[in-house]
Image (cartoon, rainbow, N blue to C red; front, side):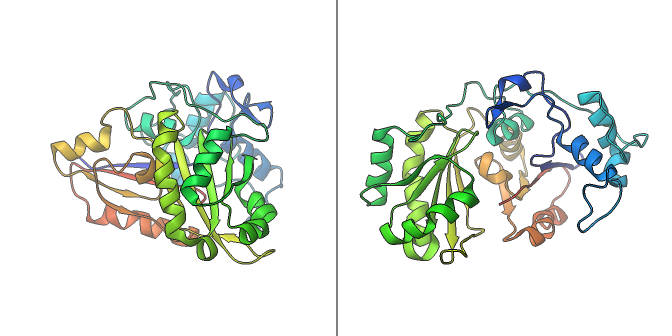
Length: 304
């Protein structure tokens, strides 16, 4: 068996799925979602001139079929991506009923999600009283902060000072099936944050919430910054996926970037994660140089 490389670029969508209208962001349906084509259109219109200029140019990926995949998936041409494909290419529609990270990663690895994920309501509070009390109990605090839908960067800016004053963890969610907990690495403690998320995860997984994410940050009010020590406690896939089967049958595979979090490390003989965006590519591909025939190499690139 030859080597195979599976590279996931988070949020680089090439056309909306048939059920896009059933999913929402801030009350707006995902109908018409086509991230890559919209980026290409903005570049062609001169709306992306910082650090680059002109139409979008990705000649290698375009020659492999990227532009053709956009056209097949959406019926829309992406300016600058019109090459005649020289490789084998395609576009697929997801079977799983969900658009969050584990749904896509599991299905790419051959395991469609067999259940509906649980999402938290866009209310304040977003979490039930008993769940909030359990988080506080595990954290050893008198309460929690946040308890709402929020952007991770924004909620740290808004509540970081109160977190330092009270010691309460900042808890929030999003459009994904997820509960995220932010805490100061030094004042709250990184180990304490990881222990809290690890202890809480089984309860959330039993609720069919896909992930509990530890979101550590450092700094002082006005200068808070998230660190690369994020950790995802993801629900275990319901059955072995391509990586796990590879491990049982032989050499397993290296895993770079973020994929190891969502595939539950099944079949991962080696893994690597960049500490910051500038080193993600060389860090993620380093294990690939040491792999051999019969191995599937997984790499994912996303914002930390």
